[in-house]
Image 1 (tube, rainbow, N blue to C red):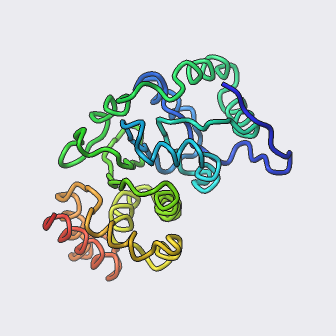
Image 2 (cartoon, one colour):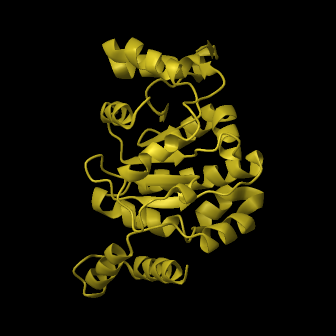
Image 3 (cartoon, rainbow, N blue to C red):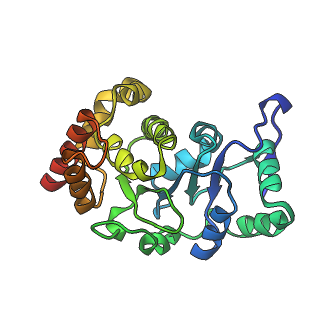
Length: 258
């Protein structure tokens, strides 16, 4: 697996966490467990090698990598066409004496085989459970030991448009990563269904199309969990703002209508 050099001043070796899936689910979990200070884990699940998502990941890996920041780790199933030197050195620092073994595993599994993402469907706690028909999607969770997850469907848009959508989603995810751990999943479910004004700005010229898509294809959430949070918030047991309660109600109602 080759990689191309980039200028020294552009190298950011330890502040980003986008990585290819391992050869097995267990191998991927072991890699994620080695990453420090991650607040939100994401999987770009795509089993169709011809889907535009694979094109975006392969051709725009470094941009997505930089944009996701230091507290969000995103696993993808189609590695970049060329590895930038900074990415290689970052993994060398992260994995230490396990780097050669890890790199060899990635090299053997470059792109993995079509359908490998299906192996991960049972790795997350969602309601309803993930099915092959739900791919491609972005699955997000905040605890490696508690895989309760938010699922964001992804469209088969042209690569440039899909890249713009992913940029807006990642911007919102990085904001949610700054929240206290108990608040992250509810915040993700809300933000990835009812975009904020800032998130709409991230979408650029595709703002209207992106917002329409998110609302008509709401993020899959554990609706009973949202109902409990709303009940506690309404009873002032949880310190939810009026705006957060309204947003959660909208997500709940959209989900029930879908």
